[in-house]
Image (cartoon, rainbow, N blue to C red; front, side, top):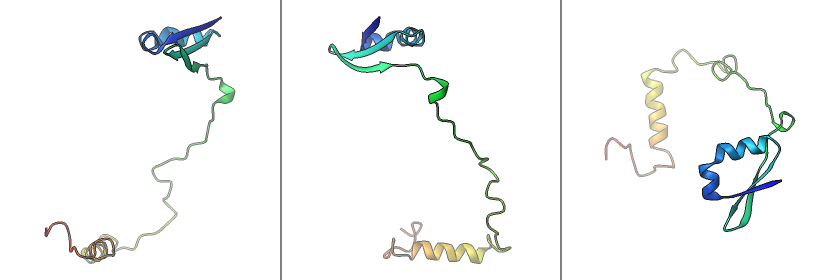
Length: 97
């Protein structure tokens, strides 16, 4: 037996509609009498499970930093390349404006 609910009714009774869908009933949500969506339970077989990699430390051996990677000279060079690039050709930095 199909259950049809309008959007307002679906918002107020969503948990009950979900329970009915999980019990095997067809649940349809309509707007102005026109069916829009159907609630269906998600089966274990249809779920996509992708293996997750560790986020922190996953690139540990991928690249090496030089000992002076955070030196004032390196930071000044990065700042110069950033503010004097083609992106901001007429600006020398945000702090000076």
